[in-house]
Length: 354
Ligand code: ATP
Ligand code: MG
Image (cartoon, rainbow, N blue to C red; front, side, top):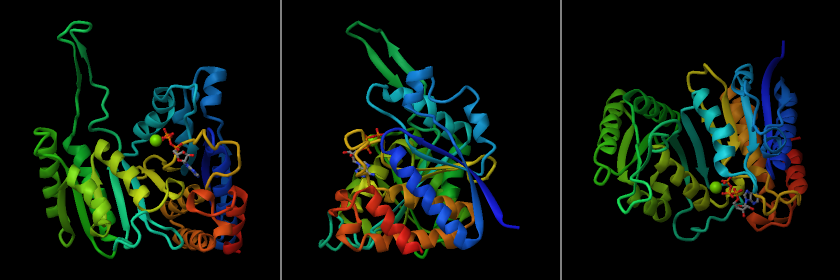
């Protein structure tokens, strides 16, 4: 019997609606070749829906998602809808309630892409950023005191739990075990943030003991960002808190070429709930509707999703097809210095697959 995966597709807003269907067609093609099928269910959850109904997703949205093997998301957010609505009305509840506590972003310099650092000895970029996705600095705890007076102050708590920190460390070390270099670097700032970050360092050291044979290093976040630019080849797996991981995972793709190619995954490692896969980029209102968005981030994201579902062969085929499509200027999009539009880039990827 052929294996069938049930996948929820949420194209979302802006270029999400242009690039997600490309990824779906790529998946359908490799599925044929590798002998599995995908049963897609489409959801119109988006800012448009918010305008019509006052909600980004229905009240039982999270429950609906639990029925799927995985979630494939384009991008949400659009001018006219405040960011906190699209974030707190959809993305953050999905990540938190489906316990997708590991945000994973591979950063690799693909053939055919020029890094802004090229020619400076930094062409060897191949790292995975593992960001803690549900606690830490992005907490709802805090507020204002003495509002409107000269003593007014704003307070924001950052909470690292032992369970939450240990499990993201374990996830990062387990990823390192699957890689050639078997190394984990931790992003910290325990010289300035004197309560949570020393705790982060302790839990990192404890994880290193649980996972012998994995090399480790620790950097303060300020010098780590400098080294991402000066020595990206130093890094293999990078584990970081919610805020630091957020910053690093925008910097990483910038160093490796373009936001238009960067994939990401929100993983529930235990598989109790579906994981969610989305390109790093947003809805890109400036180019939405023009048919020029780079579909590579969505397609690479599709490869990560198939890998997670256990279809490694199909994932590897997709990654190879992406690299083939990037070899020529007329089959890659303008953000990469090419001349293709979205359809042209898709055609090249599909051709390389068949
Ligand atoms: P968000 O708040 O959702 O992160 P944003 O406004 O910060 O969104 P993006 O929507 O990712 O950021 O857009 C940032 C810039 O990168 C824009 O100029 C956009 O056109 C460009 N961009 C993003 N994704 C792509 C893509 N797939 N192809 C081409 N250009 C892109
Ligand atoms: Mg952004």
